[in-house]
Image 1 (cartoon, helix red, strand yellow):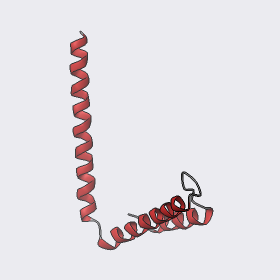
Image 2 (cartoon, one colour):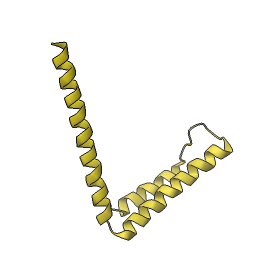
Image 3 (cartoon, one colour):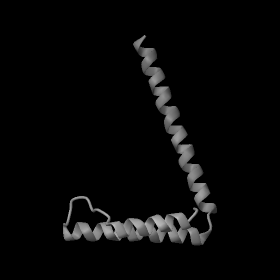
Image 4 (tube, helix red, strand yellow):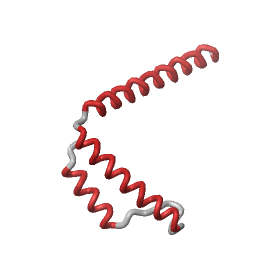
Length: 84
């Protein structure tokens, strides 16, 4: 009985991995079809957030950088404008 449970667990785990792989592949293919300007805007936004985090870490202000209210509001407005 224990062997069957182990086999079913392995099969389920394999199915989950395949499902995630298919999902990631679909996301990748959809990203390839996005307009170039949309991709560039998202890339710029992510680079800005990464630069802010790196700066806070380099200054050693906090172990986990915190975004201030102005930073959050700016990205909330931009996220409403960007429908991608």
